[in-house]
Length: 422
Image (cartoon, rainbow, N blue to C red; front, side, top):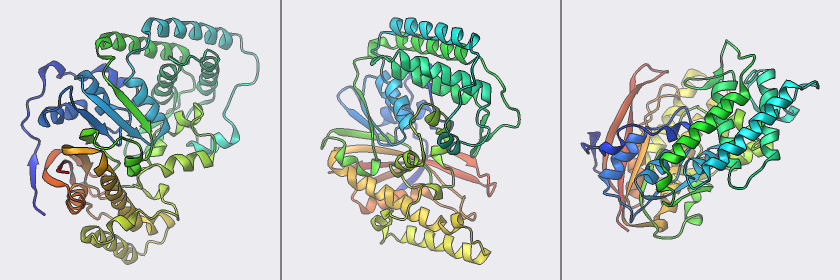
């Protein structure tokens, strides 16, 4: 296999979209790729209104929003329910924004009235729900106020507007009401928020959303479909030969449990009620860490003949033995690598029927060193897997470097560029 490693392509970004849109602030993961990177490859691939772009790991919709702003039809696949909701909301600009503002004002006023006159025991999560979140994720009073507001939102449930009301609440739960902090992994801040203006902050978020929708109202007819599903079985979700390009960023192989990033709001809003719900949610995800590996998993069969993955897995396991590491998680490190790249291979194979001949693909991925400081060259391995499956590897662009929290080395984040010839 031959491919070139380059710095970012010298494509001029469309000056009309130099500034990242506030639409992206409705709800987003802490770790995500920037909108300008999407625009770069939309231009690089020569995409226009006649094309359809797929993001099979759509997260909170960065690729889909940028496509919509440029008038390009898009489809997203997302396995995480709260992220799926965020993508749906962020690409739905056809709602009646004045009605949204009016309904939100009614809900806010009723919530404030109830909270000011509340004389019963504070609302809280069920015992099962409490076991699913990190201890002290949210203090008692902000949680109580959030649950009161949520109850009123659901009382005024509206088929057109409820998703927008909920995703605004989800964002504020994490960034305004909770005690969470985000670094290499989600954790709890030492300084706790004992109270918060829950209703006021939520209503301000609604007003921001309304302003954004008015700004982009003219693009509301551009098609953006978001499907809750598993990217490893994409051929069962999308029509054959319907996709012209892929711009996406799958999870990276490391010990970050991506489901924890959205766990608090997922539990409060009722997407995850108990451990069985959590497992069902995780089972749709690409296996990228030891916390979502299950005995029944077998994605490694898709890369059993890949030398790069086999050697990497063996190196990690040998290092574990050498270091005398015996914890359950550490014993699974080598298996995560096999399942991760096996899942990528399964995903790439499942996409073949849905891609039009000549389709261009961009995968934003990052090298890792989480497993006993052994360097995982993610982009290089994905390029190798893609090549064996019949994709043409055009190049690997350097997106940026980041400092490893483990080795303190600079690790590459890259964009693997492929072509499906059909």
